[in-house]
Image (cartoon, rainbow, N blue to C red; front, side, top):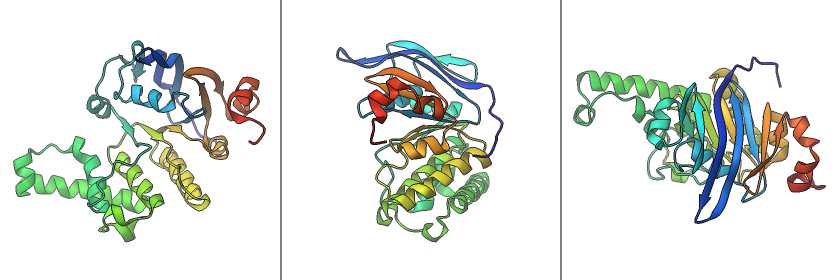
Amino acid sequence: MATKKIGDVILDVKNISLSFGGVNALTDISFNVREHEVRAIIGPNGAGKSSMLNCINGVYTPQQGSITFRGQSFSHMDSHAVAVMGIGRTFQNLALFKGMSVIDNIMTGRNLRIKSNLLLQALRIGPAQREEERHREFVEHIIDFLEIQAYRKTAVGQLPYGLQKRVDLGRALAMEPQVLLLDEPMAGMNVEEKQDMCRFVLDVNEEFGTTVVLIEHDMGVVMDISDRVVVLDYGMKIGDGTPDEVRNNQEVISAYLGTSH
């Protein structure tokens, strides 16, 4: 990877514990994310990775601990408020509107930015029409960036899985997040699709300047594109450092990497 300037801590997770009916999903997890880095969260299935993202973006409320984003700490925050603060998210299971076009799906990511009331939006008159045109222009830029111009008017449900994942990324980018949480963006993809998505994640990080927090099972991907990696196992943190440090961590090797990697 090209050398880039990593900034100060933008997101600080401290002592997060989360349980469901007495079963511990996360136990006393602490790590931070620095501005402009790609930060990976890895671990076996059931390690608590998605639960961690759900705590960060307000889907779950942890029983203990706090999360600080740009100096503002919170332990109870809903997803909408987190999105307004500047944290975007894609999901492991695509939650796209399958009957809607690519451009309309990505436009839903602009909802946070739309100032006009619903009536003016529906009538598309005056300032509301000009505002929508500005938002559509922004979305067209994302469509160009993700190289999906040919599918602008296509219903998302008709697209191959890899392209649907790209639309999901586009919708998250439409929010203009400062931190983008990606939950297994390459799951289910073939080699070529993974290479494309890796390129887009790095471009988002470098060209948009977006900080990326990434859950990914493909260790080759993680080691190639991450600046730092935190490793979870059974809801506990067992490793944290550069890809090389994590790769050589005996506890991580035993718990997750194994000889096959």
